[in-house]
Amino acid sequence: MNPVLNPIAWIAVALGGSVGCLVRWQGSLLLQSRFALSAAWSIAWVNGFGGFLIGVALAFAEEGTLAGNWRLLAITGFLGGFTTFSAFAGDMLQLLRAGNIRMFIFLAVVSNAGALLACAAGFFGTRVILR
Image 1 (cartoon, rainbow, N blue to C red):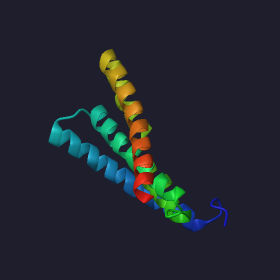
Image 2: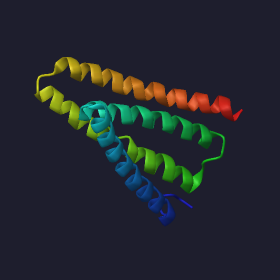
Image 3: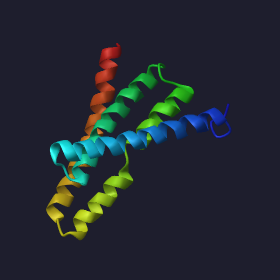
Image 4: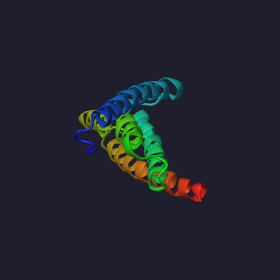
């Protein structure tokens, strides 16, 4: 069935996204309190970890282990809600407004490159393990 018309697909994405958002929020707060990280740093770490998990999930999807509504629940829903560019962008804007240009540039590069590298590591590492 077409995912656009499939109510189970809608529920999978909504449920996964809701839980992913809650886990990101709590994970970010935990990193801030446990390691005294700023909001921008904690979101960067969460996005890097989420990038790794998306890579792992994509490897399982490629192998056929994660498909259909389960893929929508895990990747589009949970991991889409867990990783968020909008929260990161808001924190980065606050750095800019505070005049912290060096930290803004550093975190922009580290967060984006880190999430991409983590995604690739998760994907290719999982593929090696699955074979």
